[in-house]
Amino acid sequence: MSLLADHRQLVDAGGVGHHTVMLIANELARAVLQPTSLEVEDGECVSIRGASGSGKSLLLRAIADLDPCTGRISLDGVDRDSMPANEWRRRVTYVAADSGWWTDRVADHFEFPDIAAGYLVRLGFQGDVMSWPVSRLSTGERQRLALLRAMVQGPRVLLLDEPTSALDPETTAKVESLLHEKILGGIIVIMVTHDAGQAKRMARRSFRMKDGRLSEEAA
Image (tube, rainbow, N blue to C red; front, side, top):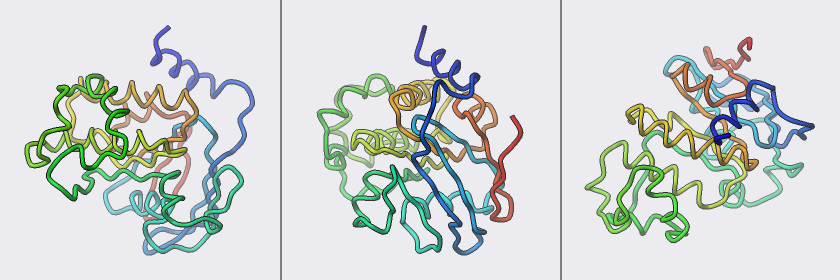
């Protein structure tokens, strides 16, 4: 059975065996984001949909400790406030729809370029992309490489903000296949997406954000 089929079976079954809740957010709030609580299990993907400006990205950034917020959050029983911010962000990594690039050589943005190289073909890249200037990359190429850059750092949680918004269906399928594999391996994924089909393919639970309030959608 393929990885996609394995994960689809896991999604349809509502998970296999007993899971311990690993990421717990309690009453996170800032700006338009109303106090929001969320629990996500080890090896689970949840999706969040909603109109632009409803607070979806604010929630991801609050979880990642990228913006000031109130409330508490823990991972694997360890409170975020008990560790340095950079350590938390390595474990709980936010990937924006259009991530930043600070030099004009792709390889310079990868802490582990050798590990990343093993995934390039799977994501539709030529083997020499690491030597490319960033200015050569399309929006979709930057999007895939930003995801890969985050993934090879070994995070426990990936916070993905429209990770395939600039991709065609074939390339989206490549990204989803790799994400399914990582989820099966135990990574937690919280994904903001406008694509209802993607939410169904990827997530065991789906949420909707409206006016800064998060609510779970019926299965």
